[in-house]
Structure formats: structure tokens, C-alpha cells
Image (cartoon, rainbow, N blue to C red):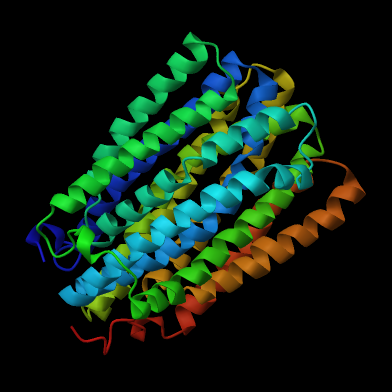
Amino acid sequence: MSAAKGYMLSGSISRGIVKFAIPLFFGNLFQQLYNTADSLIVGNKLGDTALAAVSSTGTLIFLLIGFFQGIGLGAGVVVAQFFGAKDRRNLRLSIHTYLSLSVVIGLFLTVAATLLAPQILTWMGTPSEVMPEAVEYIRVYFLGSLGLVMYNACMGIMQAVGDSKHPLYYLIVSSVINVVLDVVLIVGFGFGVWAAALATVVSQFISVILCMSKLLKSTEDYGVRLRELGFDKRMVRMILRIGLPSGVQNSIIAFANVIVQSNINYFGKMAMAGCGAYSKIEGFAFLPITSFTAAITTFVGQNLGAGKRDRVRKGARFGILSAMILAELIGLAFYVFAPVLISAFTREPHAVAFGVQKARTCALFYCLLAATHSFAAVLRGAGKSVVPMVAMLVFWCVVRVGFLMITVPLTGVIDVVNWVYPLTWTLSSAALFIYYLRADWLNSSIVSGQGG
């Protein structure tokens, strides 16, 4: 194990988590930038109908890729715990099995998403004037599924062994390329929304090339060798044991958000554009918390693998509190500056009003959203991914969908759609907090008895 990658296992806990989280933050920032570039350029150059088309696909994209990203989270926990345990043989088996699995997933997703996406958009109640451009965007986007899945796999491996810097460098390069392509294809040549999706696809494949090149050249225990690619049944079972609940959790969240999006669609094109703009800003606002929770999962996984339970307990406490405080500070700023931020995406006053309304309903409750994600990150790093899945199933799916089915027909106002988020964040964070305090999640390392 490289000493440069061992800082999560020794030394200052707070410094180790923050040192790991900062590159993650900037990496996520650049990723969000090239996602947002699509919406900014599309909204300002192609109009609100095109913006609504791109915005309406966000929940569908997460529905289709979220399940497989959850499997990737499970693989990251397996890799992190074997890395912490200094188990070279099983570390290499887990990495090469995960990459092989990712190739199969990427090819499957390309075919399935291209065929199913138009029908799902119809089920979501996407307005007829938005549908052609939404289908156009989603089909081109998912032609790059292999690049998306493989990049997430390579990034997950690097992060699991404590390297959060190289994914940042590669994301900076691909983000710049994505924005340049957006400007050239849409502003320069006047192409439609499909060009924004194409720019994203190209940038993702460039990220994959850079990441795989790094892993192939590495002389560390986690370096990739093409001859070792294949499927180890034991590793597949371990990855799926943790990854399937995380994948189901992502799918549950995505399904619930599809229902929410269909309720937003009910209020028309301006609501879709405004709430879509809010979602882009929320993506930026929550980046520090996303980075912290990813750092928590890696920290817990590595240290549990190394048998350092007291260090895990202290690190989990620091990560959870830091994420909640950061989230609330960001929420306050978003609440104040919402009109200016939403206006960057659309000049239509009605669309801006919808976006500001949602921001000022949700932003002050970001600390609860951070709490849910932080508790889930700790438990996932410990291999307890079923518990967050159940919490999300109950509160972010059953309660959320049930609340909307009752309140929207009765009231006919979009306020109730906005308030469903703080309500379910409160319930899920409370449930996970109780489990965190009472359960024996510290004695759940998956690498015990795995032998090198």
C-alpha cells in the first residue's frame, strides 16, 4: 500500500477526511458545471421549451443509471475494506471483477435506455410540445452509457483506495471540453438539444480514457491489468450484497422523483423550466455535502477493514456534523439569493417565480437532507446498505408518493409538491439517527475471514 494513500488510516481524522473531500468537491463541481452548461446554453439559446425538455430528463436519467451507480457504491466499499486490510489478492480480484461487471452494465444500459426512455417520458406526463426534444436529448445521452458507467467505475476504484485528486484532474479536462463543444455546436452551428447530449457523451469518454490510462500504468496493488479482467463469483456476490441495496435505494429515490416530476409537469412548461433551474442550483449547493459523504464512506470502509473501530466512530461523528453545518449555511445563502440564481437559467418571470418558490421552501431544511445522506454513508461504508435502502423505501417513496397522490388533487397548488421534500427528509434523518445510535454497525466488516 502506498504511503501517500494511507492518510485515511492514520493521523488526524478531521484532516484526513477534509483532505480527501476537497478534491472530491472540486471534481463534483466541474461535473456539475458541464451538466449545468447544457441547461444554461440550451435555456438562453434554444428557449424555455428546450430547457423544459432537458430538465424533464434529469429524473429519468437518474432512474435508469441510479441502480447501477448503487452497485458501484457497493464495489467501492468492498475495494476500500480490502485496501484497509492490506489484502492484495482480494483487492485485485474485487477491482478486476468490478471493471468487467461495468462493461456488461454499460452495454446493457445503452440498449435498454434507448428503447425504454420514450415510453417512460410518456408515463411521466411530459407535455406534447416538449416531448420531441426530450426524446432526442435522452437517446443521444444514453448512447454514451458505456463511457458514463466505466468512468464511474474507474473513479470509484481510485476513491476507494484514497485517491481523490486524479479524478479531479480528469474531470477538469472533460468539463472544459464539454463546455467548448456546447458553445461550438449550439451557439456556433445552431444545432438543437441533441448537441448538448453529444457534448456530454464525448466528454465522458475522454474521462474514461484518462482514468483507465492511469490505472493501467499504476504499479500499486490496485493497478489494472487487462489479462486479469474477468468475473470472480465470490467477489460478484460481495459486491452485489452491498451494491444491490444501494442500487435499489437509488432506484427508489429516482422512482419517487419521477412521480414528483410528473406532478410538476401537471403545472405546465413554466413550472418545469423553473423547477428544473432550481434543481441545477441545488446540485451546486449540495456539492460540499456530497463530497463529505463520499469521504465518510471511504473513511469508514478503509478503517473498518483495518480494524480501527474507535477511529471509525470519531470519523463518522465528525463527518456527519460537518456535513449538516455546511448544508445549513449553504441553504441560508440559497434562500437569500434564489431570485438571482434562478434568473441565470431563464428570463421568463413565471418560470423564475416557480423556481424561487421551490428554493425558499426547501433550502432551509438542507441540514436534514445532509443528515440522511451522512448516516447512510456511514452505514454503507460499514456494509450495512440495507438499512438506508429501507429508510428510503418507506419515507422517500411510500410517504412521498402517498402524500402527493392525496394532496395535489385536493389542493391543485404546487406548494404541496415542494413541501414533500422537507417532510420526507425529516422522517428519514430521524429514523437513520435512531439506528445509528442503537445498532452495532461498528462490528460489521465484510473482509473478516476472507484470507489473502
